[in-house]
Every structure is written in structure tokens, then in C-alpha cells.
Length: 91
Image 1 (cartoon, one colour):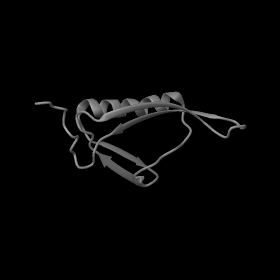
Image 2 (cartoon, one colour):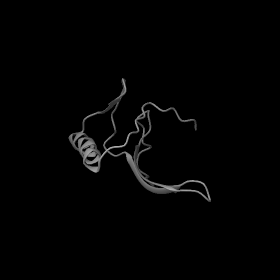
Image 3 (cartoon, one colour):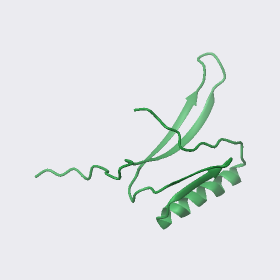
């Protein structure tokens, strides 16, 4: 499936700045409100459903014989059409 990037921001920040940003996301999710991402003149607003798929991933990337880079990724996913497929039912 092709990927279309709707918004991207990457910058070095302190742990405190990152924690503050993530806390804003937490507060917005807890309140059930849409999440707006803004930066560099770009902006996108998304409305996660009540039960999106939540993925946490830790990675080590880099060339086989070169320096590596570690990362932690947090991802929310849901179908754009709003149809989550429902729960499995056997009747």
C-alpha cells in the first residue's frame, strides 16, 4: 500500500520538551478531541476513533558495519473510512 505523508516534523528537543508535547497528545486523546499537528507552516487535524490500534516499536537501524541509530516509535492506526471491521462474531 503506498504511503502519503500528511505531516512530518523532525527536530532535536530536550526530554522535557518532548514530554510536554507527548502530554499534550495524551490530554487531547483523553478528552476525545481531534489532534492537530502544526509546524513549519504545515498543519493537519486527525480524529482518532475511540479504539485505534496502538503500536510501540524500538528499533536499531544503520549499515551493517557502521554506526547505528536507536529509535522508539509510537503509532496510532485506524481505517480512514472509519470502518474498523468490527469485532469477530461467531454465530
